[in-house]
Amino acid sequence: MSALPPAPLRSPGPPLRPPRAKKDESFLGKLGGTLGRKKRSKEVSDLQEEGKNAINSPLTPATVDIHPEDTLLEENEERTMIDPTSREDPKFKELNKVLIDWINDVLVEERIIVKKLEEDLYDGQVLQKLLEKLADRKLNVAEVTQSEIGQKQKLQTILEAVYDVLRPHGWTIKWNVDSIHGKNLVAILHLLVALAMHFRAPIRLPEHVSVQVVVVRKREGLLHSTHVAEDLTTTTEMMMGRFERDAFDTLFDHAPDKLSVVKKSLITFVNKHLNKLNLEVTELETQFADGVYLVLLMGLLEGYFVPLHNFYLTPENFDQKVHNVSFAFELMQDGGLKKPKARPEDVVNFIPRGNRASVSLLCLSLVCLPS
Image (cartoon, rainbow, N blue to C red; front, side, top):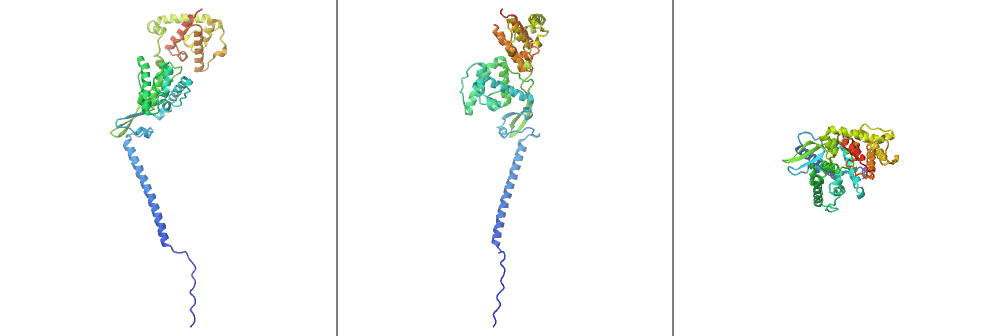
């Protein structure tokens, strides 16, 4: 009996691993399910956020980006912020810069440098030093306070001192502890402008600075916003009008006919001396505004030559003119006169009414120089 031929050998093929395939399928299914749940969760979250915004927003489309912290309001609570377009206004930027530079100049000996008003003034530290320097008085407050309660108590004391200074002169108070501590820039600017004007800061505030303020209020669980125009400065004449009146103001109000006689006499007196330098004055208001004639007149009256490097013979800008008038004031005080009531900036600014009095009074003072 012949042997059966051996069974043919099969080439090894890829093993079938249905359990493994089942495991892979199960993993992908789980992964797909997880991704799907995350996607659905995000869609639900987005939908909830969209619904929340739709409920809380006014019917009109929002034109201002409101920060999240500005929407955390209690019922009937109100919060204000400056419209972003107003922040970009050149006059608004100039006002900020002028006030920051002024504060830094006043506090230079304190080694304090202000860079951003709302961030540097809200806790009262800088305001304390500024008021102490301007009013020449010491405030009974803690130098450094970290807690919110301590900062507000310090601000309360400082602002009460400000009220004591400003209220007798009829200032309208447009700030309080909460607005200053809440970094309300409009309130801070109102406070600084009032201080600068009251203490006759040697700065030139830009005229007609106005901003659009967004007022957000929560009523019945909904946020409502409105726009309000807020004036920060007016005209130079109106802002300077709060300062002390002098003899020429009385002439303007009660004897304007005699004013021309006084001016004519002053012009005659001035030309009597300036003619020695082949110079002649026809208008006190304009020809004395840059300080050059005042400096030269002082030298002629006191009998000395004023070195040309001490002043600008042909001033080209506001600062150079202020330098000249300030230098003339120093020469007048060296000559025995009291410090002039007019500010150098007032003379240079040439306020149509007030500046006539300032310049004329200066010339009248020169007539009274001791011989």
